[in-house]
Image (cartoon, rainbow over all chains, first blue to last red; front, side, top):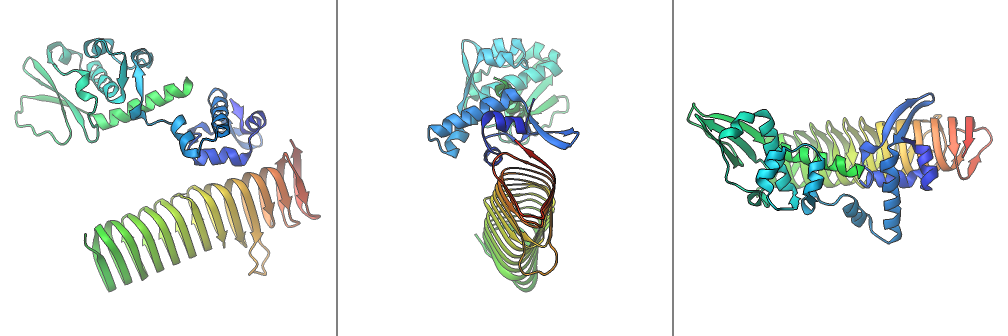
Length: 203
Length: 226
């Protein structure tokens, strides 16, 4: 950890610059960690995150990048990024059997595909037996342009058959024998984005 | 799209409108989405407002948040939620239980936020109370009695409001900025690059790295030059 005072000294930036970048979203608010010290409260930063971030901002500013451009470089739209399978595996929140079944020879995945892998991995963790008799013919390709807005995933099991369906509004069921478990994909998408962001801050 | 017009005394439900005009005393139950919200008198909204512009003479009470491009009010704006507006000009006063985020907040009158304020320009003449963090590029406060928690800015200017003969006291718990020029400031911890203090300032702890100018009579209990 590095104190705010030491950070300014080390990077030769002013309070004004630091807070301007915070307001403009170039430095995430959650990086400002307040801690009690003998003289009251002081702000600290994770040195491994803040120093490279400030160096990056300064170098982009030197190259005449506008604030908007810098913002895009530092926080690219997650939808525009593809992730290598190796990087995804490093996140350690995916079921390897799901990954092997769905990914095939693909090396790069977009966020939609990752959300589906995540949702199915979560479902498998919670309902292992359901996957024993699952009929699932979809491939990740089907989800490349899928919109997760208000989308849900349902695991439906009846007798000895299991189905997974994806839908975006309400699911009406009339057959009481059907056992349904619903996953909110909008929430899971946010969860995955936050996991990826946390991991990318560290890299 | 329809307009919502209340003239005299009236009540209406919220919704999507082209324009909302409330003249007299009008209350609206529910959220309002509109391009223009205007009028004079007293407007009460039991819900949130999302509008392009909000121009009003009189009192505006909002139960929830306001999202707007520009706000121009002569009178009072009271709200329970956050204020998200690019340009805000108020002559009268503003009281919010939430936060403000935008580009410019200029108030002549009372300014009160229970949460944080984040903008490029914060310029107020009048008594100010901000319980959260005030983070701005430029902060100018002219006041007789104000209480602020944390000010984080590039440039800070604090002055006594000239209309009053009373002794002014502008209190801030902590100020961190590049440049500060202050009078009548009482502050626990002031950290800046360049500091200029009038004789009426009382600072517990001052830390600076550039230039320090202090009038005779200014009280600083502890000074640290970095």
